[in-house]
Image (tube, rainbow, N blue to C red; front, side, top):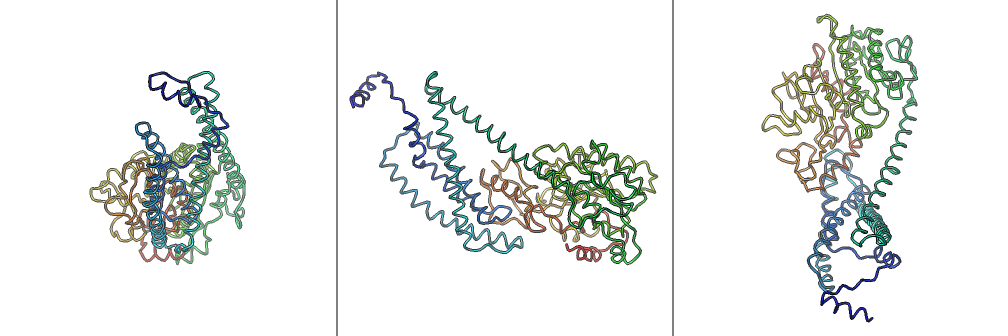
Length: 564
């Protein structure tokens, strides 16, 4: 009691009275039960409301709640930091703080309720725009529950870390001044937290994903059998053993249409198509796998076909069978389709882990085949076509380097769902013709076309590009960029793509975070939206490499045949 009276008077005359140290036992309940920050709560509510604004793809109620909860936590952290800075200069009485809390409640409660209603409406509109069934009204209950649970859990973890920082500081205060002790405690907790997150959680998740993908890669899909044809890798006389192809390689070589199906569609005698593949276990290095498939091409007479097409697959080695069958039906089986595996991990893990794998695979395969193809007499060369999907487009672009080299590198190139990191795609978008939208850029200097839908390609009679990019306006893998943090993107300015809602607006950080969430679930969108492109491949091939006499009616007939 005496110290409480003496201390203010002593401080008035400049004397420094040592303050009693707070014990960890007193700190623990103080930190864990501390009231919410006023400025933190205000910005958390604002960020929470912004999380319900529309993005590129719709979300389920629980996912929307998790996104809103995390977004609110970001706002709370920012508001708490701002509040701490304000308290360095100003002091507010308890009465003033209570008044501000009441004002905040009066303003924010109706604002949050309004945004919840609008959020449900926006999600319904977005789902209908993408051809999905509208969400149920009661999903709002799941959304609110998931958001509160997410916010509470993250806040609990944050306060536990703060408590750990105070605990470390108590130890360091035995040897250094208080401020230095808290700095040291913050550094220690930050380093340990990052090490635990990266070394234990992330590394463990990647290890689990790797083991799981390896098991899947070693399996064989239902209904897939060892080919009996000599024109397939893994079949009789093949240089590539069946058990080295991997799951996706076995699917690739075993999924060609039959001779009877091709003949029935063409209305004339067809030939049996060639399909060749080298898996990760087929050879030790990427160059060795590329050389192996070239020897397979010589063995099967691939260079005597009308078309040789090289497919750069996704990270798992998957090649969309509708893309391959489109070519085989168009040319009545007079084709040789070739692919190699560079990974068995999903594309997003391969992309984050090491993009050089797909670049090396594309370079090795394209270079090896081009060298053998160029050695043929010019009047005896088959059409050389390239196809890349998702991460495969990055590999093709990395191989050629420039738009000019890409257009000159083959007789036709079809690129589906280019990634935001593609160097040539960035060049073409940046240097597009004035007035053309970023989602459908015009590049008249070279025979390169972009399309969002199949009808766009059919509506351009007389245009025969050598390179076609198929990119959905709602594909976050195309549009994600770090600059979303601080700059409104071009795809939200001017004319918008058909999938992008007029009510979607850019907000600093929030739009970046929403697009990042869309990135994770881009493959779950309906066909023709997000990162799913199956509806346009027939039109893509019909644009860059149509057989002689091919018509729009044939394209529509083949789309119906493949269920596109």
